[in-house]
Image 1 (cartoon, rainbow, N blue to C red):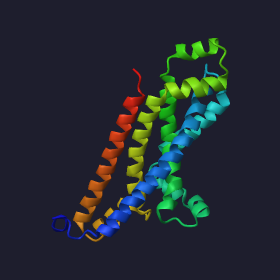
Image 2 (cartoon, helix red, strand yellow):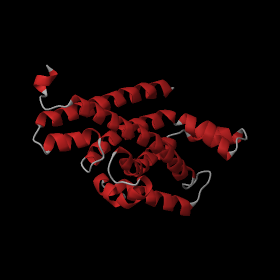
Image 3 (cartoon, rainbow, N blue to C red):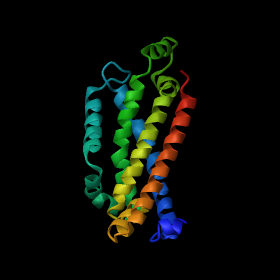
Image 4 (spheres, rainbow, N blue to C red):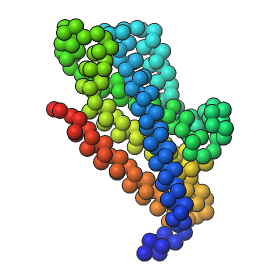
Length: 222
């Protein structure tokens, strides 16, 4: 039945494309979470009135985040081609897409982290300070644990955005379902391949959303 619905689909190629999309998504999500939390924490603690208030550092980090968050992803891929080629040795393939995916999504997640940290009740932080907790103890034992639901929700949003980024990266040969939809579907006039690629992208997105919502509900103590 599937063959009759999608006569031009090569299921080996589709399976390989799914694995490539998952590979790009998982690796870039892990790197994005690490970088995003570091940048988000830096933005929060150096902001006015916070523990490590520093106007210069805050302005520098905020400017960098805003710049890379504002560049359209397809343009960012092109801008990073020299760096990607230097790091990976090629501008094609799933691994070559990772630098652009990470640089494009980490600033976005950093802002979500900053917003999540700002939502923490100031009274909780003040109580920890009154009990003699050091600044680093407040970060590790108050800020991060209290913001976990927001961080989890932000990871879900970012992961779904990254799936879309992998599809865009596929247009310039990154591999995955985006490349399959463009090369085998659009360019060859095989609409069934394009539709099938889209269906699998949607399935991945729905699964990510379900997992993200489940984890966020478990973490939210309210």
